[in-house]
Length: 443
Image 1 (cartoon, rainbow, N blue to C red):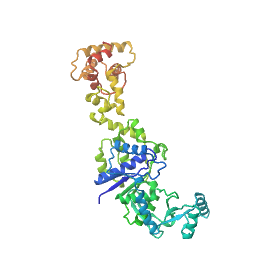
Image 2 (tube, rainbow, N blue to C red):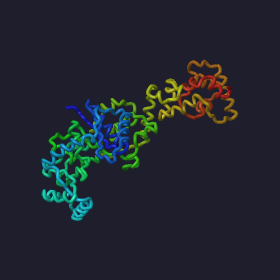
Image 3 (cartoon, rainbow, N blue to C red):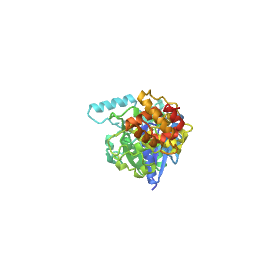
Image 4 (tube, rainbow, N blue to C red):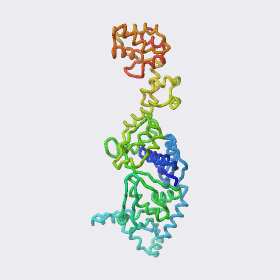
């Protein structure tokens, strides 16, 4: 059977890092199995859904390289929901209720006061057709609940959490449709998963209780229950759920200069004991992806770690991958020289400015000026075709007896204006003989 996974965001806001992780893991499940990954826009909430967020979701997935086979929109499937809902009405698996939010809250408080679980008492099941007709005549519209089978065991083998068991007798019949006719999340999601042939549903552990209810919905609609897995939620570096993680999105990460490969490298392994390795390709990460390797403990997301992974990606990045984001004139040789010192591609512009000048070198004392003057004499007589830095430092070491920092640092400061940076052997040919002489004070 073909593995089919899906990512089903609601377009009521931008994707955040937790959403991205869910999308990535579903995409990797499908990639590893040679299956299909679907995008479903859960836009039944017409009041809050916005088309700009739909566009943003598509753009974020495209930037990350998470290609999908098909896109579906729940807003285009209301007729399908009506059809399946009618089947449940006929089968007696949904029923009408009229309690207000205040009445339900009072019932919960009474049950809690008695030490009982605060579940719905199903009092609406005792209403007759005459009662319903009277309420309709009075202008009352019902909301609808799904009738759980309290004699049917609810169990599944979770791909992350292992065997799961729920007692339907301790659960409230969930509201699936509001009095205004609009749909809540639960039933349309099940109907869509059936129609789209979804075989594996991977989502956050905050959906575990939803799954317990939806297992019975699949059965009530005569469908096989997909394989479920619920991954642990992300926490911040402070060890608790962070509001920032609920807002940190692709746009902000891109602005920070984070590469899509870095996000994938980190999120593919976050929550496992496997090392995060920026050298691994997406194909290698997909081949090794295994839900059984994910733990139940919250996964700790650290932006500093993401930055380190990003630097590792940059240090391996081919010139062609970065070329369209580099300053004019910065060619492949310059990229090869500069990239070991970069954390983001954007930083290449700073180092290119060091190459092209002008630079602000620190004021040198008399001894250092004499040393730099000697260096300029050596440079003037060097063969500039190869090994310039080694030849320069070798000649100066022999002439002055300097070595280590005393030899290298004055030269680096005079030529680049910085104490640290790319290999000088690679920088000097890029800067050029005349400019090097000028920076040494001989120009």
